[in-house]
Amino acid sequence: MTKKQRWWKWHKQNPVFYQLFEHYSFVAINKGHKKLSAWLIVNRIRWETAIETTGEDYKINNDFIAYYSRLFMHYHPEYSGFFATKKLTTE
Image 1: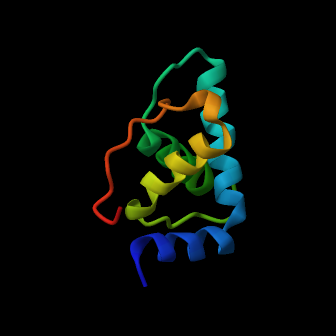
Image 2 (image 1 turned 90 degrees about the vertical axis):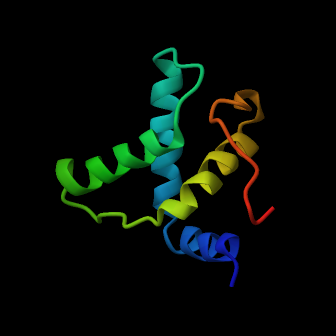
């Protein structure tokens, strides 16, 4: 199974994670940020789910972060370039 396939499987099993990724991305955008690190968003989710809430912690593989930044910009092309991306070795 490729890295992208493993991410997609995890994504389908954890749909709330993308909702949180999108939410915190828009929080940053609404605060005036023009560019941001997807790692920052993911670590905010980790903090919120591990420290601030009593819900489920998300043990996301760091290899998946690049796919979430791309998914966000795919769904919201008006924010293309908000997250810096590099060519993935699997592309």
